[in-house]
Amino acid sequence: MKNENRVFRHVFLAMMVAVGVVISPILRVEGMCPMAHFINITVAVLMGPWYSFLCAVLIGVIRMAVMGIPPLALTGAVFGAALSGIFYKISKGNIWAAVLGEIIGTGIIGAIVSYPVMALLWGRNGLTWMFYVPSFFMGTVIGGSIAFVFLTSMQHSGMLLKMQRKLGGERNVRETLESEKTAATQS
Image (tube, rainbow, N blue to C red; front, side):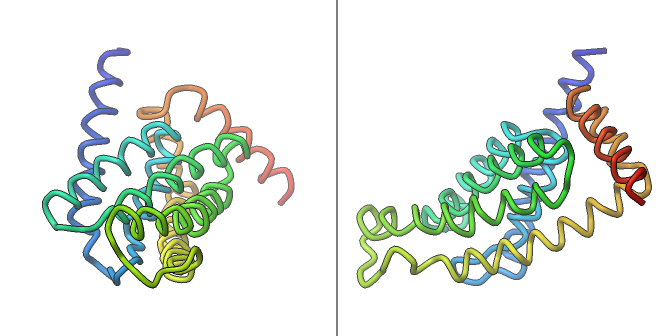
């Protein structure tokens, strides 16, 4: 059974990478790729921070190689992907925490890290440390909002927990159950 779950996780990860590459041009503006943030948060909630980080790296590398996207494909994804999963775990299954992790990780940290990468390694002149913050921040807010609506609807239908059981192991499931119990008692 454990090998079956591992295979399912790897297949699901490959599918999310493929979907991420295909939908990344949708709503894309230079320095803003909201659908990538949707994928980061979704994978972080379903599979955890390390899978989300790996998914972001794979999507970024493929986009850079195939689509000629600059290194923003990596700097604008990996920090948010990791923080989204970490914040989700720390909050014991709060979807808003996953969205906040993506906004802080990509919208602020990734945007600031993008400056030296693009200025020094890519040769872009006239940039400042805060150049990418507005577009990255708005992209994460848009993608995060879409992910929040999607994951919340999955949670209400019970599908989120089923997918986490299949993908994320018992730790994610326990944290999500605790979060749902807390939310139910507060209502």
